[in-house]
Each structure stands twice: as structure tokens, then as C-alpha cells.
Image 1 (cartoon, rainbow, N blue to C red):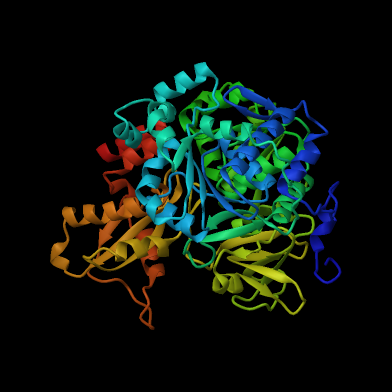
Image 2: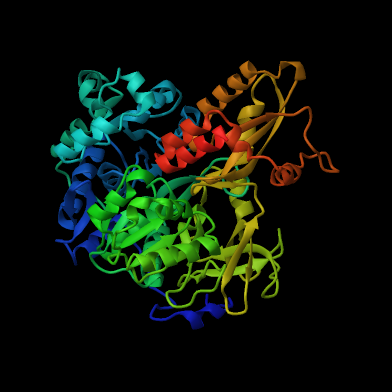
Length: 620
């Protein structure tokens, strides 16, 4: 491949190899093979509950046997609707071990989104965190799910930690559901109901099933087989299932380790990015388990107490979105802390500004760390990161150079014609981490994966960029309409479809607006069938529809009624005009006017300083 595609970036490789050899077996087999070299290393740490690689492999086998006892077969789909807990990652590898497919679902997805994911993947088996099951229960009859296994967030916590966590983390929605009882004991509270329901069971009951399964498990599955389904809006914004193979995941793990260059055996990696996100699954879990490091599992991120997490675990590696690093800079509790244990800081999921990089690098230096923050780029469709800032070669504004065996080029929009170095165009990528395609969606797959005249299949990202003559890539924006908010992708078309389904709505348009914590957030402009019905009651009805059908992170922070929306010459909604209008406003940003913002920020960030500042702004 290297002979037919230009790769000027190789001159900036230091110790890393240009090409790697990828094994033709499963993601589980890769971990089993590499774990044999460091069985006594700590695989994961969950609030002080540490498991060695030897113990982790035993847990995977235990759960694999439970799946087999349930009747899960080769190529069956098991959906895993979990935050970052041991049960989530154990289930992923156990599913992979038996040759089934893991469909990874965001637990905070709305019930109709969960139904959509379960149905397009044809899921028959579900591992679900208990606090999300209330939504699942309302739609499960409309799916093919045969059995659900409910898991508490505190299932694997040490007893003392479980009590502390329970006392301070009762979600509002769940507390109403179970009359303020401890959500971590949701399965225990309803144990009789769970055990007597043929459609669902608790985690411990599920594990007991595997004790009686004594047959030998066939785990000889190949690289080209589908290992996981992750969900993405792709280039059009409609939710699609991204099919990732064993080769995709294994190549990603090996490339990350090779190219990052500062990862070492026994390194402790703070796994903040969620396992249902390509970045979290491929980088924070699979790569770490590949090189013998420790994944520090955190099911949620709290900006207010983050310094306590750092002090307790002293991680060597942090992987996060720019929002995390802004939060660290503004957290005054870090003031006198030494961070000399930090050897690698990785930013991804959103654009890292030159200003933030400079400020954070200076902050690291003041806190006695010799590392600097480095930026990566990728998509779910290429198993997360595929381009990264070299260890010793930084260029301001660049997202780095391609990984080993990954190739980038810049083409004219909508074509395969390569543009000269320094000229802007669409970023396209090829290499072993490129997805197999979108599940049950040939049209979108054909649009995104295109065979060029050079004979290679190229992933058309829908992102604009530039490559300089040395092969450094610069991200410039998006061809597709997408808002990145705290590292999550929000697709305006998806929100518009929900709003437009309201009987009072004629049309709508959603754009991204600046936000103090999320960087960007969604705002909806709405035209009603009858302008006289513009009222708080109508707005609340529209909001309720959105909140029922979309995940919380994608809810608009602001709504605005309009008599009409600006149009292009061909009659399409000119959303760029609305974006320009928002930028040109001289008064306070729209998000500050939303009465629900303080509660939302409070729920999502727990940042007292940010909340206090917002309240002061409102008083002013």
C-alpha cells in the first residue's frame, strides 16, 4: 500500500515502525495473548477494586459461559448499555470470545433511540445498567430482545465505596422511580421481581448460569469478523450502526501504542471516555489492555472533585476531550498539586485550540509534569484515532500525522481528485481500521466508503482539512452539519426530525451556538403552523417531545420561535445565515437566557465555580 500512496509524514516518525503485522484473530484473543506476558499486572481499577490480568481473563471466561448458557451463538448480537464499569468491559470481551457481536449503547439515550439501536442491530440479548432499564421496559416489547441482564453501577465497588457512592449519587429521575431508594441496590430492591421475570435477571443470577456450562468454548474467530457495533450519525446525521471488525479494533490498539510513543507496561490510564464511544472503547480500554496497562474505570466525570481522582490514582495517562482540560485549568484545588506522575496527555473528540494547548502545557509545567498535551483525530468509522501529534514534532494548529499503515489525502469535495499540498478539501482515509460498513444501510455505506482509481477503499469523512508538504494534517471544519458538544456528536437533522414531528410545528432548524462548558451546544429555531400559538405551553410540549426521543446531551439549550426561516435561492433553509446572526448578536449569548441552563449545567458538570459565575451573570 505504501508504494502507491504518498506518505511524506514518515520522515517525522521517530522510534515507531511504518508498518505493523496484524494477527488474524479476535479482539479477545489479542488480549489473552498479550495478558499471558503480564498476568500479575493490574488490568483495571474500579474505585479501589483491582483485578490482575489473570483475574480479568477468568471473569471474561465466567461471563462467556453465562452467555453460552443463555443460548447466545456465533454472530448473535448482544447489546451492552453500560457506563464504564467492570461488567461493561467484561461483557464486551466475553461476547467477543464466543464470536457474538457487541452493540454498544449510550445508557442516557432516549427510549426511542434505544429501541432504534436494538432493532437495527436485531438484538436478542441485553446487558443494561439498572438506572436505564425504566426506559428499556417501555419499549422492549417492540424489539426482539429475549433476555435482559440488569447491572448496578455499584456491583463491583468495594462495600465502603458502594455506601459512599450511594449516599451522594442518587439520580433525580431514578429516585422518583424507586422512591428514593439506593439506585445501586436497584436489583436487590426488586430482586424477587427480577428473578421471577422470564425476560430479565440480575447480574449475580446471570453469573450463576455459567457455573453449570462445562462445554469447551470455541474462541477461534478471525480478524474480518464483526466484533462491535457503535452508533454514529456519519456524514448525514441520521443514526447508523458502525460495524467494526476484530481487525479494526486490534489494529487500532497496536497503532495507538506504536504511534503515541510514551505508553509503558503498567501505566495507569484514566478511562474517562465512555466504552460506547469509539475513543473510549478503542483507546482507553482495548489499547490499554493490549500493552499491559491499567484502565482506571470511571462511570461518570465530576469536574468539582476531579483533583481528588487525580490525587487518589496518580494516573500516568489522561485521555479526554478539550472540555476536560478547560475544567482542570479552572479547578483551583489543583493549585498546589504535583503532577510529575503524568507522562502522557491525549486530547481528542473535538478541536483543541492553540490557545488551550499553550495554556495547558504551561499549567503542566507549573505542576512539575514534563509532558505536553497532544491532539488526535479520528471518527467512529475508523475506530477512533488514526492521526496524532508526533512525540517530538509539534506544529501549531495541526492534528498531527497518520498512524502506521493509515493513509490520508485531501480531495476536492465530493470527488476523489487529490488537491495540492496546502489547499483545503475533504479529508479521506484508508487503512486497516476503516469500518466494514453501516449495518443494514448499503446506500450510506456506498456514499462513505468509496473505491478510488488507485484500487483502495477510502473513507470520506465529511471533514474539511489541509495537508502540508510534510504530511501534517490541519482540521478546518465540517462539510456535514454536526455539533460537537463536550466531545459528543450532535446531529441537527436528528433533532429537527423530532421537533418537526410535533403537530404544531411547520418546520425547524437547529444550529450550534457557543457554550461556556460544552464549547458548543444546540439551539432550535421553530416555525409553527399557526403563529398565534406561540406560547410557553407550546414550547414545553415541544421540549417534552425532544426529551422523550433524544439523549440528554443532545437537547437544545435554547429555543426560538420564528415567523419564517431564511432560505437559499433553491428554497432550502439557510442555516449558515442563522449561525451568522448568532455570532453577530451584541447582547449576551442565547444559552444564558435559558431558564433550564443552571439545572442542566449543575447536573452535567457539578462545577460550583461555573454555576456561581452563571448566577452572577443572570443577576447582572
